[in-house]
Length: 289
Image (cartoon, rainbow, N blue to C red):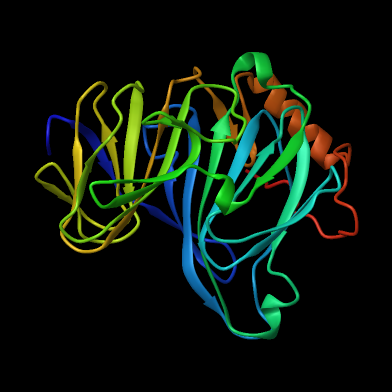
C-alpha cells in the first residue's frame, strides 16, 4: 500500500432484485468520503424482454441522490411530479431535503427488447443548514456537463469544480465528482485541493502511481498528496471527494445529522405521511431492522 493511499476498499455485493450492486460506501469504519455517504456500482446487468429494473417508491431525507449511467436507461418518478428518463452521461440530482419519495424503473420501451443497465448511484449528505431544504429534482443532459482532454485522457465533470471547470449541477458543499476514460498508456494527475478524495476502478488496468488498483475497488487517498492515474489497458474510473460535512447517521434510506430526525422519518413513512409518487401504487415497506 502506498503512503498516498489510506485505504483500499472492496465491495459488498447487494442483490437488488434481478441485478447486483457493488456497495463501496458506507464501508466498515469508513462512513463517508467528503459528503459522499453512499456509493453503489450497478451492473452491468442484462435483462431479457419483459424484464427490467423496478425500484419501488421509497423515501429519503436530508440528502441528495445522484444517478449517472454508463449504459442503458432508467425512468425516474418522484413525489414532486417529476418524470424523467436518464441516459448515459447525463445526471439526475434529486435533493431530498425535508423529504421526498421516488421510484426508478426500466421504461416500457426498454422492456420490449433485451436491455442493459450499468450505472453509479451515490448519495451526498447535505450540510446541516440545508438538511431540511425544500425537495427538488434536476436533470442535466450529457452535453451540459464540462468535458475536456488532458494528455489523451477524457474527463467529464459530473458535479463540483476541477481544473478550472464547474459543473452546472447545483450542490450544497464543496464536492468533486469526475468520470475519467484513459486510453492505454495515458496518464493524468488528480486535483489536490479537496480534503478528501477517492478513486473507483470501474474496469481493470488502472494504476495509481506505481500501484495497480484491481477492478471494483475504491482507493481512499491521503489529503494534499499529488497522485497520477495511468492506464495499462483502456480504463474507466470515477473520482469522488470534497469537504466533509460532519458526522451523519444512516438508517435504510434515511440520512441525517440527528438521530431523532431519522426516528421521525421512520414514523412518517409507516404512517403514510410522506407525499406519494403520482400514478404509483407500490411502495417499499419500512424494514424490520
